Length: 164
Image (cartoon, rainbow, N blue to C red; front, side, top):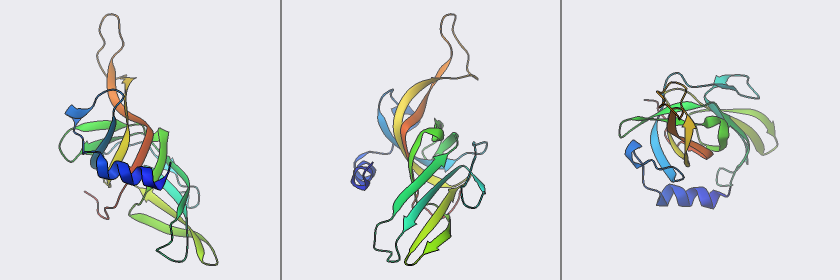
């Protein structure tokens, strides 16, 4: 995914609510990662987090950095506008930003930086809406229970420094 594509979606997509979710639609959601989220282990520090990214940062902060690895657990997102949406973080393609960042390796002017997202962090999620089986829902006679979730491609962005 190109940086320009992400920037275009961040600018052009309106912030969605739970009422805007339609199967197959690309949506932008704003909210906080809810308690009970799945976790992954960060590759360099071994710390548990809801999501992590590892990027190669140049010495000059004006130079672009490139994401080398990203992973996330599945989580519920408490929307700023109210309501909760399930995010298939396990299908994440890109994570940009984060409040908990550490330099984990350095070579000359370049540094590998590991960024973690935790429960309570405020994020923007861009992803496609799809229908998944809901193991906690009630089914009808012929069909299993389903719910709408945000899934691949999932992009998680945070420019926020604080937690809710």
